[in-house]
Length: 297
Image (cartoon, rainbow, N blue to C red; front, side):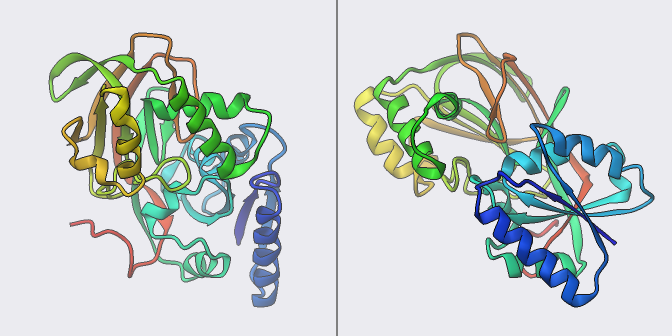
């Protein structure tokens, strides 16, 4: 028996096609399933809490990073649940790091092959992150994205990015890392379990989702004239090698936002000013492709 969480408004059109394909395939194979459509924000969290009361749950999640995050935050008993992802959202960044294809058929095949392994995730006090949490430019773009009335999808994201760059600001943060605390003025700071943000921008190209560490990527304040060249490198993940960029591999970091900036967690903006991040490993199981999954050892 499979349970299916379906977000009918996740990248409208594509998610409907994914849902139709999954149902048609399962019917053809004679596989039993139950569907659970989401009807409001955070509904996936509520659904998972109920499903997690079952002795065993193999869960297919259709959507994007936001839906995947809601599902993660609904799990109470990790020992009885395994997650499978069919990416069909506006942002599908986590699945890139997990080696899960964007193709509906191939991602469903991974689930039906029934191979699973652990993935890390980030615990942030009262919420969890599957992909990335951070502050600075990326959060500013999401704030603008949420208020922009025109455009849709990735175009809307890039227009939001352009608007933020035209009104560029750096953010004051306090970072506690490896026992040291310091204040910085940053362009952005990201705690990355996955590799990408913003629908494919490789913020942390060397991250591995199950290696027992996350990557902290800090891009410090730079001269405004250097921002555009940096972003061009950012699109290819080459910002990592720039003098303004610091990277750390760790399993715990605290970030305090000292100005009017806001943090983002898996593409959702929150009002709290503190990201208290701890890595959780060997706890969450996902269906994955054995041939492409990162090595655990």
